[in-house]
Image (cartoon, rainbow, N blue to C red; front, side, top):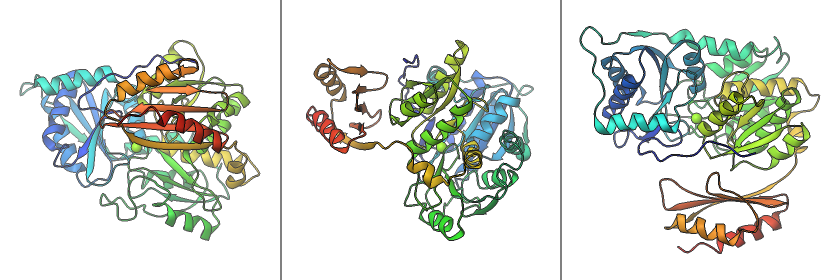
Length: 453
Ligand code: MG
């Protein structure tokens, strides 16, 4: 299936909002100008939240100042996961902004803008917002029109309730699980969700701390070694960990093994699509395991450019056109449950794993081992003329099945390859996947041959 979403060039905003090193690219002055620009574009009441980063309070204050000066009212939700803010905005507010750098190291921070429907702001509107920043033509309200601010730190409860209420009560009864929020935004929410589902919860790194003393915000296999140890030592059903803003969740199985994110996506898609039929939406960089699962469950796959906003926006477009959308997500632990909300949701992913295991007599490790196996090569290669490379590849592989949704994807019967230029560096990302290691290596060599740098 083809997708409609196209990537547009932006100057400040990347695929996940504005991001940079604090005090260098990401400053209170920039946050102020984003607040003023957003307040110029969207009237009404804007929700602001943040993750646990040390630079969060200063950037949030600056962003709020911009919104208030432009005449918007501001509700400060405090520290909460990005999907919690998105849920609350959809239910109550006219837009939102979250101060977060997601999985990036502690010295980074950024701003993600959220639309009234709870989705991240798309490319076209982000370009309008950038225009206000670069032209400096944001609107100042007069003294009698400036906005008012109030705090609402307990609104996060609505998100927790909504996730818990998505499952029958006591779904996790008798379960022992371990949560590692990484001192990030889900430090309270995920342990709370799991325990309200009936699980007995052990947690580590569950204090909010923007110095991230336990591990980096990226939930990597190395950083999750203590979580894996705790899962094994306690005999827990699984361990769950998040990135800094908890829109992603990753898992450790009952044997202490890190569950590769494409396989996690496959396992959860298989569970969701037992009940929900329709399209599974995912970027072109996702493993073919999703196609196998979709076929097994009578569903189809629709590919988008890489980036969660393209997945979410495609899901919305398909639904508007009357197409049933079953599930969505990326091969990095960012999964989208259309029945709940159209954004990546780490808390919902943790809760869904409880429901998945409750529905099976097998441990997570056995379910994972039963999934189809694929061998994947991922490389970043230097290339000054990425556009020229893509043209050469289009010619060289013109007799094959090509998908130019994002870079170039060459689809073969037993393998596929994706070659995708980086938007910011003279680098090209190459991914090759096959059920057979030898086929993947051969295919990779065929592609490598066309690089010139
Ligand atoms: Mg994130």
